[in-house]
Image (tube, rainbow, N blue to C red):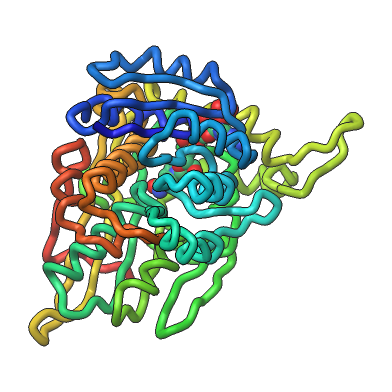
Length: 399
Ligand code: NDP
């Protein structure tokens, strides 16, 4: 039976914990450890146990010796990092020191620069390999399922994939004038950064939200979507051979963008420290503190998400287009695990990746992205564990 240490007790961790407990044929022991122990205890109280032994602990995941002490004491088989991207490297260091496998859903980001890339975590590959342990990076939905979809399309539908467009649509409404669906600090850093896409062997940079398209999403309808840089672009460029172009689009409503522009214009999204009443504060951290907690949006959010990849390429010498996507209903997620769909679509793949590692289906020493493994068992598990996928063979393409 699997013994898991999960770090973090926020929106995504809440869903993953429910899924670990539902999957009690695979998982037997779960430790929930986070910065604020009360949140771990609150989460543990919501899980009915169903055969899974749950413990909680306080840990500062920025502190490697504290992590090593906790891992050595609990002796998990895998550490599942559902804290923030800032903690990826410290948790990987602790896993190396204790020789325990690692999984996360977002790539490392230094706190003082709004910049994310895989290089820092890929640099651990040889050390993980030598230690005989594995790290699975970016095992949420995007990144995560979008990489699995790419591996599945490459395996079953194409001889060559030339273009991938990843489309992330959220048709949900939480009724607040402004709130983010996952950690506000990480979310706003991502959206206010420059856009970037890859074409013909080079990265092309855009101003933030400069490229806008419209798309008619199944079960959501017509939405404005904007080109963003997203971390799976970096790993898919490396791992999907023959790729000529890859872009990532996310939908935003006019109201959300107007709020964001105002907050940006007045300096509230800045990560430069300022002096306030004799104390140094970071405006974006302060903004996070006053915005609604994403974990609290569940009961209020209605509507659906639709996230997927449109592939263009060649099969048997002929051009082929193919769209793989998932639709997730915010209220159904809330009824099942008490959370909205953004946390749900991230927490479920985190559980599935952990399960496949534990069962040895996805297991090789080193540091890997999801698209480097056989997609089939993951695709089956998505259907089983609440994120069924759909395919379309004549999708409307994005201009
Ligand atoms: P939340 O802010 O809701 O939760 C983060 C949790 O991490 C909180 O419990 C927080 O503790 C804890 N934490 C933060 N810092 C530390 C620390 N130093 N030590 C220990 N615990 C800490 O975030 P989400 O659940 O929304 O997001 C979790 C992760 O999932 C993020 O990395 C995010 O980027 C990623 N994500 C990935 C997606 C994907 O599709 N791949 C989509 C959405 C999110 P406290 O309660 O004290 O604040």
